[in-house]
Amino acid sequence: MSLSFVVALLVGSPAQAEDVHSYARLNQVSTPHLDLNLTVDFEARKLKGHATYTLARHDETTQLYLDTSDLTIERAELLVNDQWQPTKFTLGDVHPSLGRELIVDIGSVAKKVRIHYQTAPTASGLQWLTPEQTAGKQHPFMFSQSQPIHSRSWIPIQDSPALRLTYNATITTPKDLLAVMSADNSLSDERPGTYEFTMPQPIPPYLIAIAAGDLAIKSISDNVAVFAEQYILDDAAWEFADTPAMIETTEAMYGPYRWDRYDLLILPPSFPFGGMENPRLSFITPTVVAGDRSLVNLIAHELAHSWSGNLVTNASWRDLWINEGFTSYVENRIMEALFGERRANMELALGYQDLLGDLERLRPQDTVLNIDLGTRHPDDVFSQVPYVKGQLFLVYLEQKFGREMFDKFLRQYFDDFAFQSISTEQFKTYLKRELLDKKPNTVAMSKINEWLHEPGLPEDAPKPNSDAFAQVEQQMQRWLKGGQLQTDAWTTHEWLHFINNLPLDISANNMARLDREFSLTESQNSEIAHAWLKLAIVKKYEPARERLRSYLLTIGRNKLVSPLYRELAKTPDNLKWAREVYEQAKPGYHPLTQTVNEALLYGEN
Image (cartoon, rainbow, N blue to C red; front, side, top):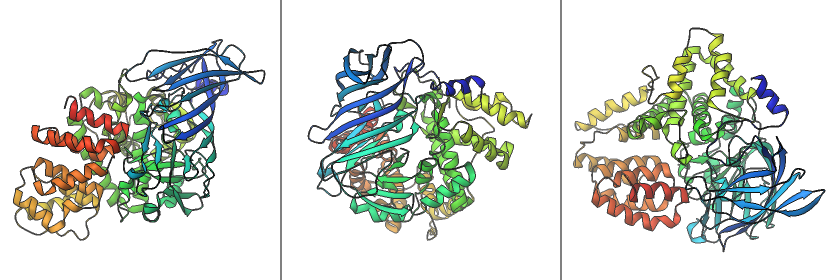
C-alpha cells in the first residue's frame, strides 16, 4: 500500500478515483455515515422520508454535491449547535444517464445535513409488485436493485463506489409486511410495522438494499437463514443447505468472513439478476431453486463477493472487473473445493463459451477489462467480459505463479485492501510489488497491460475445457447418426453443453426426437429451458412456442430473457410476436429488464 494511500485513510478521506458517473466531489466533502428514515407507501408506489448524513470535510468547501434521479426534494436542513435549521439547495439539469445533481449549502460548521424527499413510482432502482404479481397473491412486494448507479433513484446520495459509508435505518411498512435490508436483520417473524437496521461495516452506496413483503424465515445454520415467500421457503432452504460449508471453505482459502451473518432473500421471479451481493443479505432469483442443487454456483458467486466486491470494491464502474473477475474466480475455487474439479471445470468451460459469444457480439472497445465508458450508463458494462475475461486473467496468473503463491497473494490482497475501494491502476501497482517482482521474469507488465487494456483475449489466454464435455460431444455425434443418448448421469452442465453445441442445421425430426425422449420443452430447470427455447427460436421449432411465451411471461431475470428477445428480434415475424409478448409481460418486469429488452425490441438490434 502506498504511503499516500495510508495517509488518506488516516485522515478519513475516501479513496480517490475518477468516477465520471457521479456528481459527488468526495475530495471536498464526503458522507461516511447515513441515517435513513423511510415509509413504504404501496398505494403511491413511493418511499417517503429523509436521509441524514454525517459530514466529513476535506477542504473549505461550503457545498455538498449529491446524486439524484427522479426524486422529489422537499427541503434540506443543517445541524448547527444541535439545532436543525433550513438551508438552500439547487438541482441541476437532467442527464440521461446520471440523473440530476443536487447541491446543498452546508456552510462551514454544520456536522450533519438532512434531505427530506420522496421517490417516484418510476424509480429505476425499485420494483413494486401488486399482490397478484406475488406467489401468495395476498400482499404487495417491493425490492431495490441499486447497482450500479440506481441508489440515487431512491436515496439522494454520493452514488459512487469510491465512497464507503455505514448506515442506520428506520423503515415503516404496512403491519402485515416484513421489511429487510442489507444490514442486521432480525430473525423474528413479528411484524410490528416499524423496523430498525444497522450496517456497521462501511459499504459503497450501491450495496444499500431494501425489500418489504410477505416473508417467512427459516434458519440453515447459526449464521445463515433464508427469507422468502412461504411457497418457496422450504425448497430454498434445502437447495442452499451447503451455504455454511461454502463460508467455511472460503475462509480457509482467503481469510475471515467479516460481515457477521450471511442470509439469503429469495425474491419474486421478476428480479432482473441471478443474484445481488447485498452484504449480510444476498438477493437471489428463484430461478436457481432447481430441486437438485445444480445451480448453487450462483450462491457461491454471491458469497464470494463478501471478499471480492463488498470487502475490496471497484472504485469506479470502469473497474468492474475488480469486483466480478475476482468473484468469478473465487466462486469457481469454492465449487472445486466442495464439489470437485470435474464440476468446477464444467462451469468454467460453460462460462468461457458464453464469453466467446459476447466477444463476437460486442464492439472491440467493449471487450476491454478496464473499459472506457465515458458517460454511457454503467449498466452497459455488464457482460461476460468483466466476469469471465477477468476470471481468466486470474486463472492465467495462477497458472504462471502456481496456486500456492497466488492464493497467498490473494489472501494478502483481501487483507490489505479490506473495506476500501480501489482502481485498476492501484491494483497494477500492488500486483507488481506483491507478486510480479517476487518471481521476476515470470509475467511481464506488458502482458498485464494486454489483459487489462486491450480488447479480446490474449493469444496465450487459458482455454478452459472439460473431459466431461468431450464425452458429451462423443455421445452427440453418435445420437445425430441415430444412436441413443445415455443421460442418466448427466448434470445440468452437461445438458447445457449438449444443447448449446448442437449443430444449427439439426433437422426438425431430430428436434422433435429430442423433445419426445427428454421433454426439453417442459423442463422446469430454468437454465436448460432457456438453452432449449433459444435453439427452438433459431430452428423455428413451433411445438416450443407456447412454452416460450409462458417462460417470457413468468421470468424476469435478464440473463434468461434478453437472449431470447435478441434472437426473436432477428426476423420480422418473430419480432412482431416478441413485441406482443413483451407488452403483456412488461408490467411484471423490473425497470432494468424493461430498459434492456425495449432496446432490443424497439431500438437498434
